[in-house]
Image 1 (cartoon, rainbow, N blue to C red):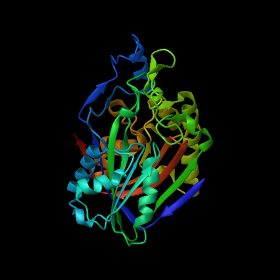
Image 2: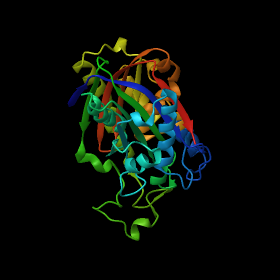
Image 3: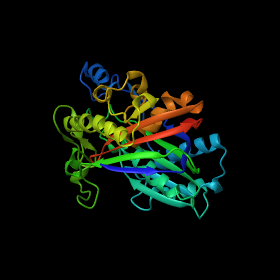
Length: 350
């Protein structure tokens, strides 16, 4: 495992922006009669917030940015770095963070960076951004993290359409000498990268006319080569294998007492998988919040979205000792131990 410690950086606030449009899983046309009830019971996902045609990354990112900036009262001129972590992009080039820089009217001296990552994206981004701030040369940064997953999945695929929602989150970080350390664990199993993949659209397999054709893959699963595909059983086995083990490794390595942890924030994959992980890790149910029912799987944005929607009052009104764990695309995983005090939280719908 790769462990890292970052000192002198504090989390000041977290926001989440989701589309106003809600898609109910009950009655989705991809299901045969009765399938919707079974899938909702297994996944725990009853509905998701999804973008409507014409909406893009910049729309939700601006909503998340504006939401947390308003809560904190920070001036735009004080932002030294803007980092976006996502699997999606508004353009092939330029980086979406550069587009956002102009849209948000940030200073020309602001560092902008895109990091391409999926489900473990928030933990990867937290490590990268906090490391940038830790020596004090850069003072404030906004980490934007999340995905617009619904446009990247086939509307006719019953494996993916019921699962994925859309969100971009913003985490405000600041150099603060003496702040509690951020403690990280990272891992990757790249040999199994094809378990979650969009086959066509990159340099390896450029888009062709055939890439855009809908084809049937099993009963009632129709998708194109430009749509994301997932080996559900393989990802399930991966998730329940690495997640409990990595949480234990993180806590043992950094000598974290489980009784001192107020909240365990897991990537919101599906309810059955997450319950299995929680039980294997021997974590009390009351310490593990879920946002799955109303938001689905939100890729890299799922941990901060869960914090904002399920534990907002606790994080805004006291000290919180937290462990986060995410796993997925790559196949990669990561854990983070972090401590906060009276942070600002914002929830935005656009």
